[in-house]
Image (cartoon, rainbow, N blue to C red; front, side, top):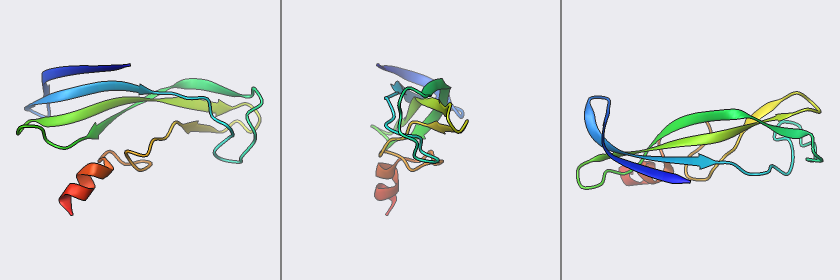
Amino acid sequence: MVDVQDDVEVRGQLSTVIYGTLSYTPRCCEKYGHKNEGHIHKHGKRISRLTLLKSQESYVYFNLAKQRYKCQYCQSTFTASTNIVKENCFITNCVKLAIL
């Protein structure tokens, strides 16, 4: 599900904010590689504000609610990942390429 809101104040400037959710069924535990045989469960969500490219001189942000998971086998937790941004980073890959 994706929702767009224009003219939202972010850090003192009017911006466009896109809201979305990232969730999937993981194949295995990301920490130890245990195969998902019903022991990896949803464990809340983590919201990340990602910076996108400017659009018509307006800042654009993507508030992405990433699903968190917990492996019942090893008790480790991990977050759903996407290829638009590196892990633990909030600047998207397209913004990094535009800077270079």
